[in-house]
Image (cartoon, rainbow, N blue to C red; front, side, top):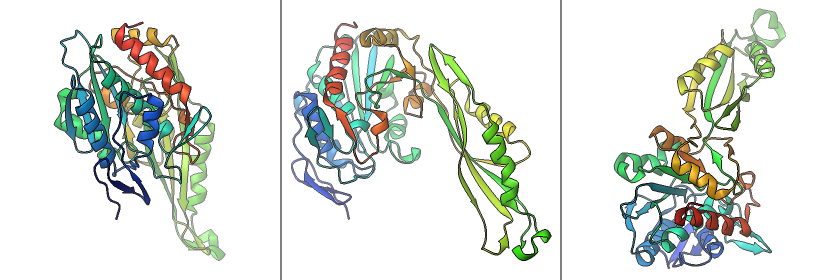
Length: 375
């Protein structure tokens, strides 16, 4: 059985045993990233890391109000500023792939979660501890269970139990973006498309009706599908409707009577969830379509004043976020949200996951400049 104990004691998670250190949030965020990586925190086993972060915030950031929610840690200033900015990062990782503890090779820091997204967490924690008097009130949220089913996501629990802690004029998620601002996110829909036939012995196939052959029309429509490209606030979102799984067959000598094609629709955030469902049903009209998973996207929200200030601080043009992230949760609450972090999204979840240390320091500098002066 995996076990977790408080920082300073042995911690085991998914077969990896190490010692949870006392974190120094005021240290170089590169070193802090390595320290976070060295505490295993596979989804569902984040307790030790949450303990270490909570203890460090309470000891090193007396200017912050700190609360705990399960394996999530939240902290905020209460300075009475006109605006509030929220920085959020998930502290869980996918299962470890022989890549903990961390290791440094030149300018690259390797380890599980370096890119997704303990580098972002380190930047957030460092700024929370070292900016006692920011220009905007600041909330930081370190949450659990982002990498697994949405029902267990710590932000959902926080929304139910500590809703007021999520209020902000801008939310910035430290998701890996290579130091660029990725605005909004795509919505995602999964559905099962069933074709039915009649079983028969394959030696007398003319007596049956092959459901797998019937699925050929489903695949033909998907192959011929022409996805939209949509410009929203200067960000181009590309849609995609793909078959991601085909299941059918009974035995080597049986004409199958059912085939299931699983499709995934990644849709631009100008479509609502119901519109996305209606579109997939239209494309596959005549077939039995059952939606099994659906999450709406998030509009860029770049017109918000705080978002404009942040874009100015980065000095870069925003781009669309391809994929779904928790910015969608904030958008549903009416809070403008963007993705911005030092990691490379293409390295997330890989055995060779790593982050360029210059990206970590750059992200810390950009966010510090934004929170101090706005430019």
